[in-house]
Image (cartoon, rainbow, N blue to C red; front, side, top):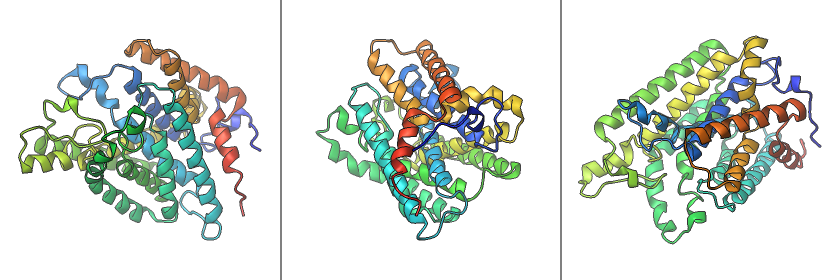
Length: 371
């Protein structure tokens, strides 16, 4: 049975940063609030740095990829951080993660059944948790190589599965098409590699992670915008799969499939660019938050509270959207969602500890004995 602990042990105001990776929680909260903005904030479809009116589109794709990188990190953190247990100890770890995956998939399917216009990402996450089970004991370089392979294979894999969804309804297209498993596996493997490589330990490594993530994002998007600029009619593209405009020749088609900077295109540029942004955001959050004093911990507590219960917060915003489907999308609606999620998370975290779905998941996963 899982019992609530005092808030001072759970990242509450004044809690020691050594007791939680508060920076990771802050990054997770930013990812979640970004996904909410993409769902209800009325953000722009395409990002154009020369047009400030389009800057809200920065949340498209990048919030989901940050969430996926952090999911990989969560797998790493609950499976031994830098040193996962050797057999037979790794067996129970895999069993608990498998049960967590089942819970995430079931919650995702229930949220999909509410019929909101949101493409629910949770079933894909559950599958991704299962995909990490064989590689839990891999070292960081091997995981990075695996992520690179997934990045290269992402676009062809996404194209290959499209015919399977020819007759799928709104419910069906959410299962592996909008959030392709191969594409998002790259993000999860990157997050797991960050933990296995100890890149969040120490200011120097955090700075390296910030520089690497920033350089990867800048390089990827520069290459993509030069070699495969987003076509004018890409607004009609389906999320998760590459888009090749009518009349494109073979060279242009290959460039759009592998090098497009379009969000949710599954191209190498899209995967590397969004992964780079995720790493930079994660590193910046840990640099600014972890190891700081009680004053900083109090300031970031609202975001820590949200980030510490991501499954519950994500589910709550879908349920609210289903309950009030006629509320117009826009910045005001997003602000209402954001404030509501933060307040609910703060109160729950302060007085009840672990989030309700996190508590349920831990209890079910706890059915697998330690030995």
